[in-house]
Image 1 (tube, rainbow, N blue to C red):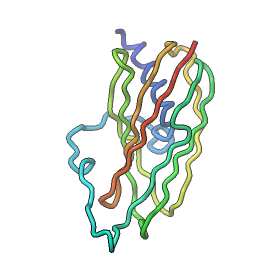
Image 2 (tube, one colour):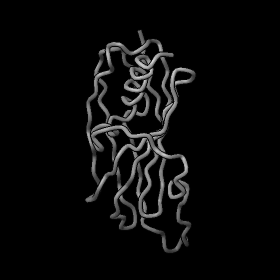
Image 3 (cartoon, rainbow, N blue to C red):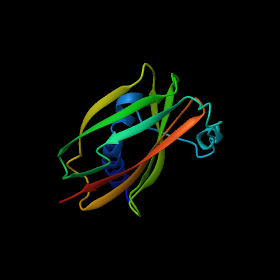
Length: 153
């Protein structure tokens, strides 16, 4: 597959989580060997640790090349959570493309909603199903949201 097609597929996949572009200003490859992304504090249920809830709306989107897609990413604190949250996006478009990206950092105060609009590139291949997982890690807590973008012709 030539580099131009891979770039178009990558741009299309980013529509899954528009926050990746808006928060960090760029998409950077992310190392899979980041131990902190795999660690989560276990706590006593009587004294819950500070944590957060991650929500992405919509989690499933349908768009045609050239169409806009509006998304919201919401962080809601639990038990006094007030730490920065690092985002990581894993994208899987089957044989067309796969990758893991640093999607930036969200900072308090919380709750906070980030709203984004991105246009699916007009050169995006269609039909194509792009699966993604947005992972948020902060203060020893992690959350994941599964996402799907259907690029239709």
